[in-house]
Each structure stands twice: as structure tokens, then as C-alpha cells.
Amino acid sequence: MKPLWTQLGIATLSLAAFSLAAWAQEERVPTAVPAQPSADAKSGTGGGAWGPALTGQRRPLYRLCSNDSIEIDFTFSPEMNQTVSVQPDGYINLRGVPQVYAEGLTVAETEQAIRAAYSAVLNDPELAIVLKDFDRPSFTASGQVSHPGKYELRSATTVAEGLAIAGGWNGQAKHSQVVLFRHVSDQLVEARLLDMKAMLKRRQLGEDLFLKPGDFIYVPQNTISKIQRYFPTSMMSLYTTPAQF
Image 1: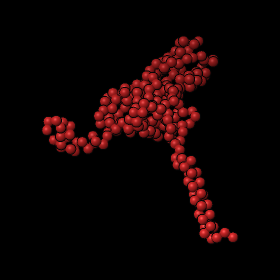
Image 2 (image 1 turned 90 degrees about the horizontal axis):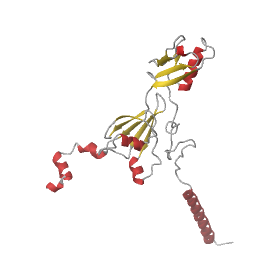
Image 3 (image 1 turned 60 degrees about the vertical axis):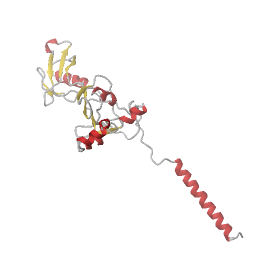
Image 4 (image 1 turned 180 degrees about the horizontal axis):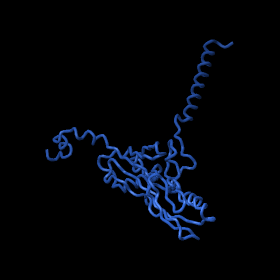
């Protein structure tokens, strides 16, 4: 039988080996793994948890809004051709048939709805509709940008490009915490915090999101400019123009 001190030594070595193995196992498993974007996420998205609005379709079909105007052309009944507008209640008034609800429909869906309405008075009506006047896709930039306002989305535009269109940020901007707001529905808005300073510094714009119609970019004010107004003017001049002293 082995001496007691030998047994204690073996037990201590075994416990140390077990602890070392457990520690090594913990080292191999990261404590936090950032969620990856879904497989159908579009280019311009990066890691992190993404909501449905920020990973949705980049180029959705346009849907009619109030005050939009459409032109209806009948192939074999040109006397029925007409131009109508979407009323505030969402309906369009058609010649010779009941109203059709069009707000929120795509052009193709509106064409089908109008064709169904005229099927009661025409035999297999052939028609086509064209958007004449509609709400231009746009985004809004606000906060500490040189030219806050609403801008049209004429092509694929990222947040960084949108900020450049708005004149870039001013000297009071906290460009490490730019916020992108996007409507998920009429009652729900999703927000995404973007560190534009780090992205531009690294020259890697992998997380620079593409803007969608209705997006709102907000650039907050930095801390220094918030407290600057509480400093006496003479004290501020001491730091800004020390040469005169």
C-alpha cells in the first residue's frame, strides 16, 4: 500500500490536471459569439443582431400612396382611357364602375384590381397602367449635419453617402454613434447604432447600410459641445487662442 503522502500527492496532481483541462476547454469556447446576418441579408450588412427591417429586401416594389396619379390605357377601348389619383381615403374613382381601393398596392396589383372591376362591363378587358405622379423615394438627415433636410434616393445609397449628401457632419457631431431609424410598420420603428468614425478610420465599410425610402439618419451632439456653453468666454479663449497670452 502506498504511503498517505503519496496518495495525497497523486490526488492533488489529478485535481490540478482536471482544472487545467477545464480551463483550456473554456479558453477554446468564446464567451460571446456575435450573431451573423441571415443568409438572405444583402450586401452592406455586417455582424451583430439584425432586425427584419434592416435585413429586408433592398429594392421592394413601389406601393401606391395618397395623391399618387396613374394613367389607365385600354388596348381595345381607348374611349375608356383615363387618369386618376389616389384619394386620401385610399380609393380611386373609375369611369363607369365602382371605386377601387388602391393605396398600398403595387402597380401590378392595382392593374389586376382595375381589370376585375371592369370585367363587369367589358369582355376580358385589356389594360395597362402607368405611374404619372408619385411620392419620390427619400431619406431624412438630421442632427449635427451641415445641411439637415429631406433628400431623394435616386440610386443605391449608403449611410455614409447619405451623410455626404447632407453636407457631412459638423464640428459638434458625435460620429461614433450615428443612429439609423427605419420603419418596420406604421407603429414600429427599428434603430441601428453605427460607428461611422471607426468604419472610416479602418477604411472598412462592411457595416455601412444601404438606405431605404423613409429612413431617418440622426447624428447626435458630442459631449464637449454640450458643456461648452457653460464655460466663460474668457476661459474658452484661453484654450482656443493661447498665443495672445
